[in-house]
Structures are given as C-alpha cells and as structure tokens.
Length: 521
Image: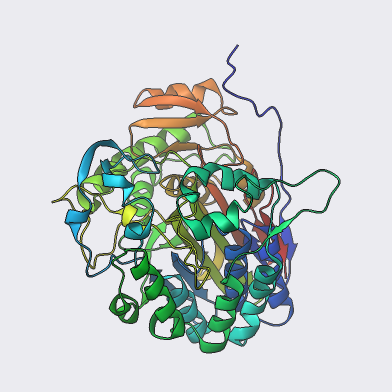
C-alpha cells in the first residue's frame, strides 16, 4: 500500500454567479470587499484595488505593500487589453560581491547555489524596490472610477482589527518560523509569545496586531501611491532599511515607475490570449500553446494524448525559457504569491498576480511602517554571466502569469494563480481545456492537472488514470502527486468568466484552498 497519499476526499467548490460582476480571490474576505465595491457602482479596477489591499492584510505572507505584481486589464468600451508591469528592481547600489557563493543549494524556493548567510533569501540584503503600490495606484488613476481612500477603507479596517489566528495563519507562520525569529519586529507580530499562535476550541479566534500597518495604509489613502516612493512613507522605509544594513536607497524608490505596456497577445483556436510580456511567464505560455495548437481533442474531458501534448509542449518551451531568459529554479516550498480576478457588469476585467516572492518575503517587517518587505533579490541567479544573473538596477525574471482571453471581440475568461513556476502550467491547461476541449468553466477548474516546471519530471495528479501517466512517461520521468491545500505540488488558480451564450458572469476560486472564494457583486 502506498502511504504517501492522504487526501481521501472528493472536493468541489461552487461557482459564484451574478449579472453585476464577480470577484475571485485566494481569500473570501477580500473577495467580499471587492464585491461590495461592484455593488456600490464601482468598476472592475475599483473592485480590484479594494480586493488587493484587503488580501494583503488577511494573507500578509502572500503579498502586500512591500511586494510587486503583474496586472492585466480589459477595457470593454475600447475592446482593449493593457498590462501593468510592477516587477521589483534591484537596488542601484547593490554590490554583487556581498553575495558570495558558499556551496550547496539555497534552502528556499529555487535551487540556486547557496549564498553566504542566505543574504539573497531573507533579511535586509534580499529586499528589492517594491512595485506593488505604484502598479495598482497607476491602474486606478487611469481607469478607476471611485475615490482612492474609500477603496483602501476595507483593508484599513481589517488591519486595525488584526490578523485572525485561524488554522491557515498558524500553518503559514509555522512554515516560516525558523527565519521569522531572526527579525525582532516580525517575531513580535507573528510569534508574540515565542510560539506559533493557535486558536483554542470553543473560544473566539484571537487576532494578532499588525504593528504600524494600519497607520501606513491610512497614510497611503490620504497621500496617494507616490508617498511610498517620494514622501513620508519613503523616508520611514529607507531609514529602517539603512538601520538594517540594506542597500535600498531613497533614489531607488523615487526613480521607480510602474509600466503600462501592450500585452503579449496571440491567437489560439477561436480565441485571443492576452498575457504579460517580457520577464514573466507570458512568453513561455505562448511558446507552450503554440506547440500543441490543433492537437487537442475537443471531447470535453481531456484524453491521455491531450495530457501528453501539454507535457511535451511545456518540456520544449522550458528549454527555450532557460536558454534565453535565465530562469533555472525548482519550486519546492509554498510561495507567497496570490492572485485575484474581477469582472464587472460592463465586462471590464482585472487579472492581478501580486507577490512577496517567498513566504513572508524577506521575513523583515519594517518597524516604523509595519510593511513586510519582498525578497525580490532571490529571483536573480547568483551566478554571474547568465541572462538572469544578479546585478544592480535590474529587473528579474518572474513566474507570474495573469491571462485574459477574448473571443469574438468580447471578454470570455481571465485567470491566474499562485505557486511559483507551477503557475504557467495551470493557466495553460485550464485555458486549453476551455478553448480546445470545450469544457465549461466549473469543469475545467475541477479537472485534475499535471505539472511540468522545467526539471524534466512531470507531476501527475493521483486522480488521473494510469494511461495518462504512461503517455507522459514516454517523454520524461513522472511522479504521482496530490492536490493539497498548499501549492507544493500544483498551482492554486482562480478566475472569472462571461458566459458567451447567456452573458452571465461566473467566478471560480481555487478548489483546494478552504479560505479562497468567489463572490458576486
């Protein structure tokens, strides 16, 4: 008997349906904040702002003010897709000699060679210029309709209440506790008694105070997005980072600008797929989908040959990715990425992946602002002379893969997810299930998947038949893996859709994540 598999249940999660739009998020409380904005007459961009800031409070290990992201926006009236690149940038004063190789491997997400004291993994030396606030603020300035302070109000309320110490909080804190204890402010928030906080049966769930985070969010609401880069918040951030020995400077913050750019758009079947270009997973998605175009059976549930086509396409596309984009990581532990998707009653869509990179990012909460900072330096390969090598003032290659799909010049569906390099695999398969196989949205989200992340080994969901594994095994090694509540084995996607026949809006949250939810506006 194989004792490696323990999930002996069959889980289904209902779709959210509505005529005024839907919000899907990795945390239902955040989705509810966004849905309330839709109900009050806000558009998809407004709802995304409220959802995004709220999820950064209720899942602070995933994303937040100190992080970054890629956002896709569909504008219904113009029938136009835009992309906002809010990736991190390494400090201009970064000295690569401060990151000497010491042998072995990093003990975190990526199998990079080990760096002295894991300086690229956690601590003040791992912090890159955050792009999250400028990205979401720029998108709102250009396409939002509601007032900025009101959209941040739900997140401020949640931050003032504190972080609920439920089972999900306890699990995530426990996974990062060995590094959290190295940073006093972080430890005081997440391990206030020296132990992992736990809810007690029969009693109200305790809430953990989040330091000065509520005050910081209030300042952002009053002063606007650029205060984090040029104002009072910028001064507080740099003072704390200098005190901690980091190289991020006031000039790094002041010179940072999120980019609004054209999407990477390509035709697949009867649909147009719009992804993020450049240093994201978008180019690898396009490459993969081009390799199985016309080869997938339109039979509803995918066949073994379909999974084989997906696996070999990803295998070939990752060869190109590694050779030209420099990403040679191997995802092993939970990431700190989250994703949200919104569609409003007019058909506008926001598809936003935001992250700190590793769980709890750098593990550093800045004392004066309560901001948990990213560890974006860890995206870079610490070996010199490669496309993605560590350097000063550089943007690294990331794995974020938000996608908007249109058909007949109208919105169809949008999705993305968390899970490091596993994200592209999930987005690709669900998109193909919809476009090529003709599956409905709910079935596609519940359909078991495979994962190929570039290490020449495919993970095959335990619910798939032996014929699937045998077909893939002709090309690469395979292993059986389960879908669990953590994104160790497979990505955690969510998405929204406009029914092409009825016009009804649907939202799908990650099936295996108990706190994920989709809420109608």
